Structure formats: C-alpha cells, structure tokens
Length: 330
Image (cartoon, rainbow, N blue to C red; front, side):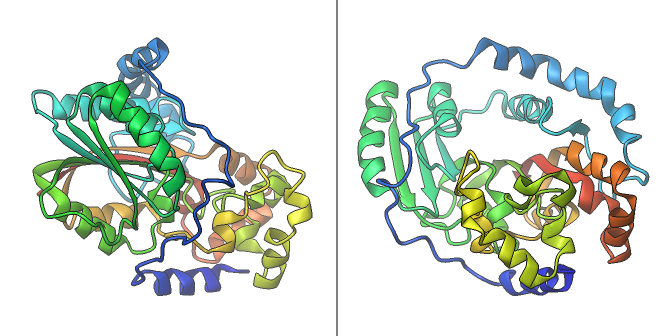
C-alpha cells in the first residue's frame, strides 16, 4: 500500500515552495476564453435556495457518515450539489455593505468565470496568478477583459506560497479548485493573510481532496473499483498505471495524469486545512462536500474499505471530497 510513501511525501512537501512551470503552454492548450457578460439566471436562483435546501438535507447527509466529523460545518452536501452556491450566499451575506476594490484570484488560468464574476461585480482591479505560464495567451486576454469591463486586470505567473504583492493589497482572495494542489499550507495561509487588508476575506472552494476516491485526479479513469488505487496499490504498480499514456490517450482528457506525475498535491486532510486557516483567520462558514463514489465504494467493496481504515485513515478522510470555506483575516 502506498500510504507510507504518501505520508512521507506529505511531510516533505509541507515545507516546499513549489517551482512554477517554466514552459509557456499557450500554444499547447485549447483556447477556452470567452466573455461571460452576465451571470446565468439559474445560478442566481441556486444561490437563493441553496442554504435552505442544505439545511433541509443536513440530517439526511449526516446519516451517510458512520461517525461525526472531527470539525464543525455549517452545511453538508453530496458532490457539488448546492455546496458552492450556499458558500457564495454566505460570502455575499458577510460582505454586504463593504466596498470591494481589489481582488486576487490564484489559479486565474484563462480568465474565465472565476475572474469575470468579480469584474461584473464592479471591483476596481482583479489580479490573477497561476503556476502555469500563459504569457502569450494573457497578452490577448487581458486587453479584451479590460475593454469589456472597463476595469484593471493583471495576470502573472507565481505560486500561492510566495505572492508577489505588497502587504494589505487586497479586499478578497478567492480560489476554486486550487488549494488541493498547494504544497505548503502554512505558507499559503500566512501569505494570504499578509496580502489581505485588515478584515479582508478569503473564499476558497476546493477538491477533490487526495484521500477520497479518485483524489489523484486520474486513477478513477480505470473504473470505480480502482478509485482508491492511488492508496491501495504499491508504489511501483501505481506508477505503472499513471504512466500508461496509451490508456489515457483513449480518455476524453489525455492529460489526466498531469498532477499525479508531478505529485502536485497538498496531501492534507480536511481538518488540517481548517486547523491551518485558523492561525490567521476567523472561520465564518464551512461547507463539507461528500463523495458519492466513495460512499458507493464503501458499500460495494467492504474488504478494501476495511483495509483503508485499518491503515489508519479516518472515514471522513475517505469520504470528504472537498470544502468551501469563507474566512476573515484576524
């Protein structure tokens, strides 16, 4: 079982400041940039109803766990259903009445909805960072965003662990599907706090976490029965699987092993994220997302499930897919 190697890697990367990817990948990826002029009505409606729906489903979702969670949450959801919408509703409630001038979006990539939602909101400036180098693409995207929204936009390559900004520069730092890939939680938490203004907000929606089914972003392509093989296989067996590019070339996304080949994960449990956050922030709202495939695996493969638990993993480590959290700088 790979668990010993994973935990050793977890300790090693916990003090790393990762390198950015040096090659400009602008010419190697599909151009997915488009201006999104308005928020879909469906999304607005979901944000209105999501808190009530998750309150109604809380007891049902809690019964899916055989043990209580080791940390407090405001809501539980299955997969992504209503989770991020409830989190945004909480963010909007907390930020009501504040004037947001400058927002940082780590993981800006090609300036999609994660960036444009803030420009539509009317902030004066949005900065974005990414581990990937998309300098050629950004040189085209940024002028289009600035022309359409009449706001200042800046993207640059940098890791969250070493933010290239002055102290107290931002009102908000917001990420989606980023924190599962950071390698030094202490550094990103302290850096986020450093660049936020007093009372500034951090809003993070992230996952899949590494220890849920398919948490390495690629082994699940082999089928649900293989979904925990990033933990259950030996190191050599696992490496053979993720390096079988002829298999992944047959998938919709042939680049599925990208993160696994680079071991670009935090390897943190959900409770560890929140413990780190609380050193610099007051947690205002937490949604925990449960993995439906993990729950199905628990039902269908009890022997492997017992093997995972017997190795020292908690049920919540295997079932919690992700977290959405709103927090305020202390």
